[in-house]
Image (cartoon, rainbow, N blue to C red; front, side):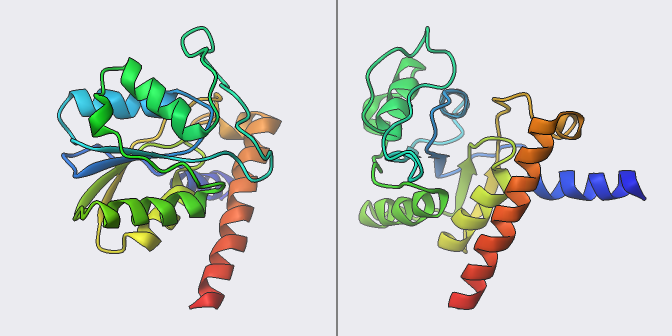
Length: 197
């Protein structure tokens, strides 16, 4: 019973799909390069022609917190998450003109809201989309992007940046705190969404 409950948590939080050809790749804002590197890899494979990184900085920090991994590769000065993610994309072979801009979001829901504004302004019909995010963040990111793009089929392609994934999360206090924190945020934020509707 205990193992079954853990598996249900894992299946809920750690959403992951095989990517398919899509209209766009979304990258919610963060200070890790891995998600943008993955988006660039998928772009180079021809799975999408446009990439939309999104983010100003975390509302809890009030400024771009800096590069959180691979500083030796991405040592520039960045004012926003979007500037950082754009740089990662370009250094990994994505032409600048294929990168859309959203640099105002300060939390995940805003990433989705402002990304929708960008794609509407660009008159893009997003039927299929790839979402590159952190492994632990996959369910919550999908929840928000699906809310803003209800008719879009999403393929979630997450990256493990902090050694917390489906097979290891329950082995460390950090992993347990991260996953339980995500569940708590999903419950609180989804309940607020339901009450608004």
